[in-house]
Amino acid sequence: MRDLMDQLSHPRPVVYADRDHVSMRFRQGELQSLMSVQQPTHLVVPYTRTMMGFLLMVHKPAHILMIGLGGGSLAKFCYHHLPETRITVVDINPHVIAMRGHFQVPDDDARFSVVCADGADFVRDTRKTFDVILVDGFDADGQSAQLSSKAFYEDTCRVLRPKGVMAINLDSDHPAHSVFLQRVHTTYRGNMFVICVQERANHVVFATKGLTLSSKNMDLAAALQDCSPVARLQLQAELGRIFQLIDDGSRFPPLDVRDIGELA
Image 1 (cartoon, rainbow, N blue to C red):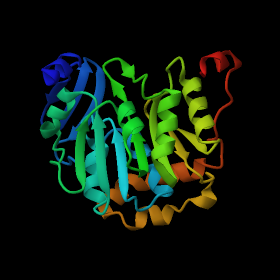
Image 2: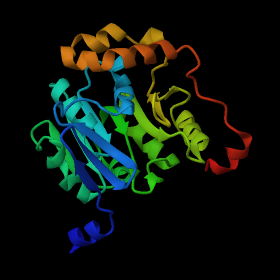
Image 3: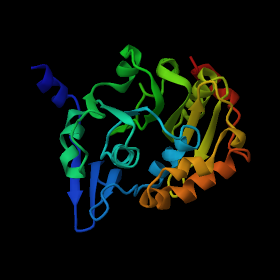
Image 4: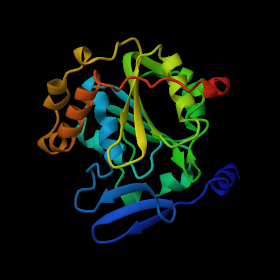
């Protein structure tokens, strides 16, 4: 009965397929995920390549937590190109998880698992810790409120290992965008930077636990050296762009004083 109630409480996305691509959408015109039929592990949507910027700081993560499965683009890429990394994916929507076969998301195994749960509840309750946390919390209504709260960011910081990295995909047009940025900035004591995503109205925010963010603490060569030629071809330009931006205007933007009352 609980499973039935969970299914009824979440919207069912639609999968569209043609000769070249498979996509997931909750509404017509609002793309959630996109997969190349010929290259199913390729990172087609630009922000996914930006989120892989965590490799500049954590070259060989032992355990990655991903909040938000979608079509599994990041999950598949990390599974195939980081063969020594354990990956836990959490998604609140059972319909999304049920469609993993359409997007060739691998079955659960010793180092890969998909959990149906609220991501905010998961990080609040888990006793595990992670080297990298990737937050991509969008649903039919847009950016998830519970994955943008002060409590959620505090919980991510708690379960992140020392010198670990969190990457968050945020809607830069959200009316409370600067509030969410300030919450991350406060929680991670200023160890964060913001990267504008090319070709899309998104920001990817990187925050680290106990690691000062500067190019001096990053290694572009090390981030790419263990990648396969296919992965390197996909990531080199974007990781290089992030590396150049770190010390040149990608710091946290000043908070609008009108937003201060919304921070609690």
